[in-house]
Amino acid sequence: MEKIEKAIGVFDSGLGGISVLKELRKHMPNEKYLYFGDSAFAPYGEKDKEVITKRCIYICDELVKKGVKAIVIACNTATSACVQVIRERYKDIPIIGMEPALKPAVDGKKNQHVIVMATKFTLKEKKFEDLMLKYNADHIIYKLPCPKLVEIIEQDNLLNEQLVETTLKDYLHTYDLATIDSIVLGCTHFVFFKEKLQKIVGNHIRLIDGNEGTTRHVVELLEEKKQLQLEKGYGEVTILNSSKDEKYLKLSKELLEY
Image 1 (tube, rainbow, N blue to C red):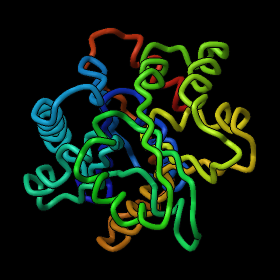
Image 2: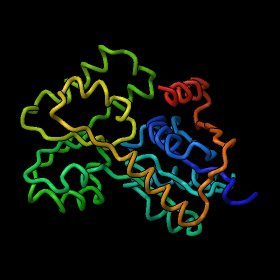
Image 3: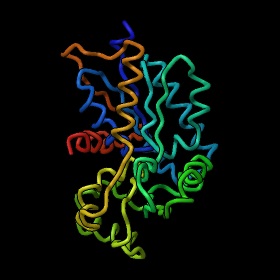
């Protein structure tokens, strides 16, 4: 098979990476995609680095065996844990990671007050600390771990409006939202809450995620390698999950159309 015809591999600790897959499909509708959700081992945000790295290597090995032409780590936690390890292991395949979109929140602005919602792991890792060091002298940055939001997605409770609203308000109740300029959604699961979150915090607060920027980067890499699929008639999506429970495949498909 020509490399251009091969699928783009996408993986996450569970179902959050479906939000990235949606963005990828929007910008590259002719590509084939192979998505792997690691729901049997979710959530990654509460695990240690060695465990996360071991899982990511296993998943990437499986994607490489299936002949993908690029791998998107659609998970801020997994990227924080081991993106360099993964890149060293698969030097011939583009590996695209994610990090909380703090730069777009503060670029070209002064004295920004920014909340970064992410997993505990992402917020305590050196990768994020290094990112914060670039900006926290000129801006006020609040770190907000939100593990319950991951659980809501993985447990198929996204449509439980009362639970979602209560959980979001509980996380934000200690902040004076009138002073906040933006909220960074530093976990791919959280993108599914964007509309509901905007209603709660008001339109004066910008909600920023890394999905579009990650997608643009994938497009640029494939264009550079002349591997971008422009022919119509492809566009198929294959979804795999480490859990034997069929509900995760069903929920993945539902979230893809959400």
